[in-house]
Image 1 (cartoon, rainbow, N blue to C red):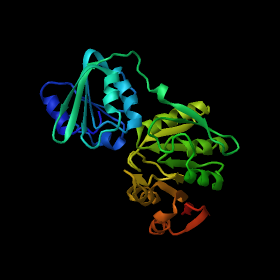
Image 2: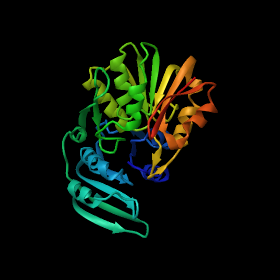
Image 3: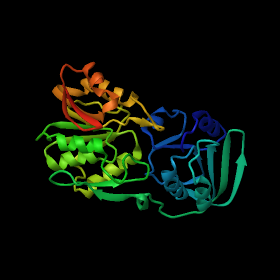
Length: 313
């Protein structure tokens, strides 16, 4: 699990090991070597294992949660092995594995560190203790939203999404895609305000999709919204009357436009005739210019000191 090099996975397989490759990122899941016997997207299956290998663990807020889940997959007497570069490992990883394993040993290399130990087995390991529920104070029927460690804007509604929701009057019907849905704040809010909307919610992050699924359940919307994994539009084959999105624009502490570019560039071919793209973004990112390259009509619906909401068709 983690940033696992497929050459390593295939080498282990060639030596007679049954390898199960687990990914929380849909891009990694899709890109995994087809020669690996078993590929799983997310922390949702019981996968009895003799050992678990976690390479480049997720950020510090997620590492303990993922480690606990792995404890539930490894048989008694099995091994937990964590590998991290000397510079990229999240703070507290040493404490995390000592909580999860017995007789932990360290191995240090020029560029990486390895911890290994005998698993402290737990039954029915679940990530639910790491979830939290909050109610958004917006809209006529404020939705409940479920959070997990590491998700964007955990614990509060980010100002971009808030501006979009306060600006956009939800259509009474039609097909709407919430692209890059995160924990589901936008899509769940719109569905509660406009029950006849057929809403699809998509994200690349399994934890975001799981939070959205739990949020749908908390709002009585199980079965009323469609929740799918996607890498931008990869995995989405239908057309929509509306696409609504707040694209991520941070990566390792700096601005990045690649995701927004993909969301905007792919929108026209996923919109039905007369369809609209509604997007919110930081003023400094100049989404207006990107939209004008792809759409005939681009309007600014609202703006604040830091954000703008655009309507493109």
